Amino acid sequence: MVGPDQNSGGVARVQDTLTNLRIQDSKAPAPTGPLTLEDLYRQHRMRLVRLALLLVDEPATAEDVVQEAFTGLHRHWSNLRDAQAAVGYLRTAVVNGSRSVLRRRKTARDYTPPHVANARSAESLAMLTAEHQAVVAALSQLPPRQREVLVLRYYGDLSEAEIAEATGISKGTVKSTASRALDALQKIMANR
Image (cartoon, rainbow, N blue to C red; front, side):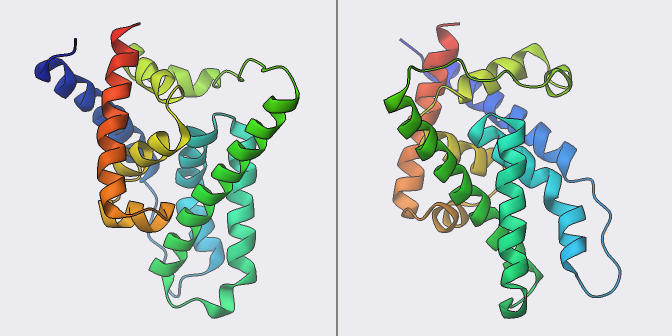
């Protein structure tokens, strides 16, 4: 049985790992002049790729998801309210694109034998400590919605309301999903 002190340690590890990744990704210079699609791409692409990678576990697929999000934004650029709306649009598009990828994978697995997931790149693993690697590995074992909520909360640094908007679920569901996800993550890590 997991005690409260152990559970808070697991939560702290998840927060530390995803916060560390967020900090690494947020070191982009601010643009001068009016914001362009190119500025958004330079500032947010890598962070969105990392977000997608945490959700889909394949670098090439994560890059495809982000590219599709930027393509969609380009198509709707003239209808854009402001730059902040663009970032929200991109984040939601990446989450929805990742969900679509995971649905397609599940459908494919129903028709073919399950396969071993691709390993993370050596570069991304080298950047993480052993403890952080364990957290990322445990994250990949969570159900998709739980993984989405934790990644958006601790890596994306989004509020419960922003997570609810990005994922299309209620704020209460975000809270309960996060709680269940942290409990499940703690159990997974305790069994390692």
